[in-house]
Length: 310
Image (cartoon, rainbow, N blue to C red; front, side, top):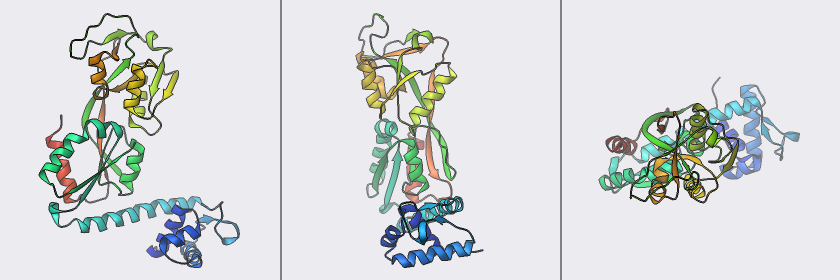
């Protein structure tokens, strides 16, 4: 059996738009033509792909199990088609073109700028675009070929997206300055961590990131490994927001040291060191679509982050 790519494109558009009429507008064809294409595709594959009332689109239009499986393949096929078109447009080398980089929020703030500066100085004619979102959103965009290469904070769980560790980042537990009455003086550098026990951390509020954040997944894993159970938490949508909330006395958090270094020096937050616990760290990852050939602009960016690794 061979799939008709025109019919598959119509089906994929219906799946994305949620209705025959919206897919027809997107494809600049009539609604009856969309309905006919779906019927023909279902005949070819000999299975129902969409569930609909009376043979027409309705608010209840949804994919069958077979339809969902086929749509996943269609998404991959048409994402690669888009990547192929963009690759052909970039074949003039590094004298012109675009590079779209995805970055999770902390990396976009604290790691990416140094790489962008080097890249832009070497190839000033390449247009750089940066997409900033949480890790899960970035992974989705990499799979859809909306992003050429990405740098994220947490583990990646999506078939078709390759991930490679490229940097280690130190993590620290931070608390408000009055967490323990310990005499501290401003010395212009990060002060020593305050030793605590698991009992000290038992009933406090942990400030955490939202679902889909790489920081949340890593934090939950690291705390569980050292035997700390989070019983009470408050969700805040950025690491910077969490750091400021810790300084305001709302709770404690596990954060990258880059986010809180200035607050530690100023005494706005204090670092806690759990008794018997060694240093905490996490891997930062580079992402690419697994079956997508690298363009020259991507190769050049990978050279930059390799040469300038800390």
